[in-house]
Length: 310
Ligand SMILES: Nc1ncnc2c1ncn2[C@@H]1O[C@H](COP(=O)(O)OP(=O)(O)OP(=O)(O)O)[C@@H](O)[C@H]1O
Ligand SMILES: [Mg+2]
Image (cartoon, rainbow, N blue to C red; front, top):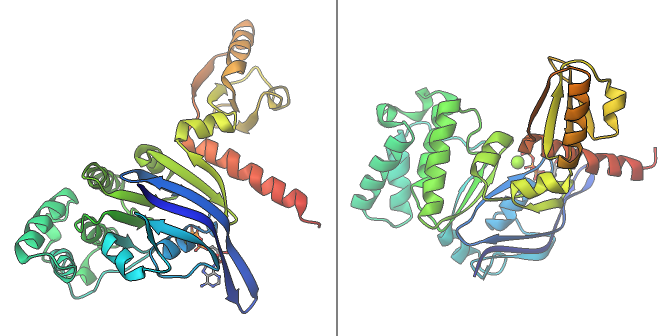
């Protein structure tokens, strides 16, 4: 059985400035137990999709099933299966991190003993032990966010929705979150996670989708996205080549030392050969997910602009 199946999901918001089509025929399938990254620019439609999948918002048309349960028809059953960190949520100011975790698990019907042992575990894993008895209002922003992540991940809910879980966290805290999220997936939870940190998406996602303007541009593994956009290799030249000359091989950007070219594997031999002939050093490395994302979404924006009459 699939974890999530979305079929032709569309959402049009009615706003004062007219209708806003936030999702346009979104099809998406997430296998049960998968750690799934959901990427897209600001306003692409990620949070809207998550709200619909978690029964907080009705789609204008289309359907979503979680574990075979229809989200629109059976929202109450869905709520038992999921836990959600909404985007930019805030903790309850008077409650401590430990109270957040324990009280929330109690509300969800777990015993006091289970709540306590899960809290012990997750507070340690998230580096919150020292702060476990401090009211949230005096915690720093990043520690407040960690409290929310701890609270949601401690549920071990079958489906976890994490909308920018690491927002505002330092690099150490982010890595702690990654570890806890990975552990949740190993224990069997299906995870849908949004992030604007593409290194994080690359570290965490077993599979990912890229959405732009309410359309899914890509669903698959990160490596295949790089092949799809035909940008798999980064060549860095410090002198010896002009941007014009390199442009026919791919995308060229000026960088600190000279020029960066994102290109296909097939161009590497020819270009390194030429660099050797010209006696200039060239650096060869893999393209990052961020570079592939910029290429894919950048092309979609260009197509959009081309279709829109000026
Ligand atoms: N309540 C609302 N009323 C009207 N329009 C809305 C509403 N909520 C979102 N939108 C619009 O829907 C589109 C998608 O927004 P959404 O919040 O889903 O984007 P997002 O991908 O989560 O962006 P971000 O990365 O900034 O969180 C945007 O154009 C946004 O302005
Ligand atoms: Mg959002």
